[in-house]
Image (cartoon, rainbow, N blue to C red):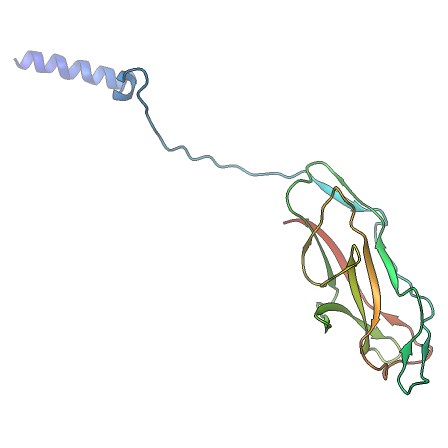
Length: 188
C-alpha cells in the first residue's frame, strides 16, 4: 500500500512540475478567473500653437475721456481687441482642452461678478482703480486666472475689452497704461 501511495504522490508531483494544474483539468465551459495588473505610461502627442506666436501686443491707441460731468468718463470706441486669431492643433488633441488667461503677477480685479486683469497706470506705477481688462470668449465674459474649456472643432474668439469700473479719478492725461498676462493651453 505504501508503494501505491508513493506512486500516486510521485505522479501528482510530476504533474505539478510539468505545469498541469487543477485549472487545466476542468471541463470545457468551466471558467477560471485571475486578477491581472497592467501598468504603463500614457504619452499624448498633441500640440497646439497660436498663429501670432511669441508675445502679442494689444494696442488700444489713444484713449479719450471727458470730464464734463465732473467724472472722467471714457468716450473712446473700439475698446475690444482680439487676442489670438487662430489656434492650430496637430496630433492627438482629444481630451479636455482648456485655456487660461492669467495675470503675470497673479493678481486680479473683481467687477460686476467677473474677475478681470488689473491695469497699471505707467505714470504713477500704480494699479488703476478705474480701469481693468475683461476677457471675452465668443462675446461672453470669462474670468481670468481660471481654466475654461474650448471646443477645438470651433475656434473660440478671444477678446480683451478695456472697461471703466469707477469715476476715473486716477486717469493721468498723456500717460500710458499696461497689463501683462499669459495665455496657456492644456489638456487637463
